Image (cartoon, rainbow, N blue to C red; front, side, top):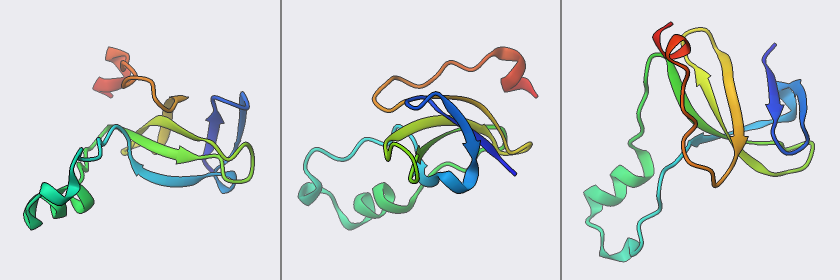
Length: 99
């Protein structure tokens, strides 16, 4: 079972309390109607799929209901950190990023 820390409630709870909301720090285009079909497709569907630390959005669905960001290692499936939405990308400890 994955345990996830909500930075707003300051609680660590089972994954069932949360819902995954995609890759973090994806900026919405300022004028979507000006994009070509290929650019719109890229914005909607093309995401990174790294091996190792990955920045993700999560929502505390059965708690405060707020979105937050997390860094999860896709190899170990371990959460390295969580932080409030709207903050810049969390810096990764060198040791964690190298594992």
